[in-house]
Image (tube, one colour):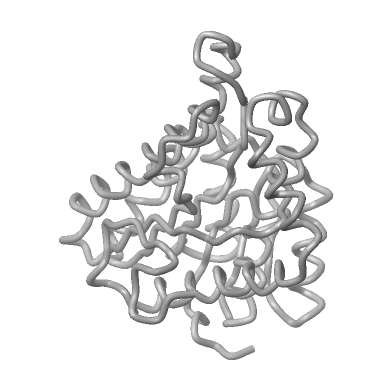
Length: 260
């Protein structure tokens, strides 16, 4: 354990795989105590197993990130078991629904916005009072370049990511006086579970075939693990204060002096 984050306690949503698991593993390797949460306990348990087998300290707390009672429970049990939360990584996400506006099911479209926006709002609201009181905290939302793109037939995802970036801007302005930082981060492109769900979706194959083809190509190439590790390293940098002057901004892969 390197110990760069040894005084920190982190909650990571969507921590059962992909970028969430990579961030959790890296935080724990740097000495942070970590809670991972998502709806799927078996995946969370595997993340915790990997952390504890390497000598780290982690907790698996399943829950629905869009449900206020679940969020409150995850935060409460984390603080009871591990201590005050100093890091929140909002990583939970969904790739769809896919298709044109007017064709997609409005309820499915709105459910995606609950994951993209309500979930980070709930978790941020649940940890913010304690962070303000201690004048210490780092809030990271895993965003996407789609936040700044117009991608037809992908409105649920694009709008959700755009809203996340705007929320970070507003949040950072409100918490700056407390010494708390907030960032939206482009994690990079890697073959994660979200990519697999997109590839498997008949609607995605119908409405965004070019993206599906790119994801299939990415799945067959090496280097995915390196992308996950670089994202996790960048999250450590954000917590450590390396980019504090960028608080409230979206940080893309080429938006810093040492792009990844």
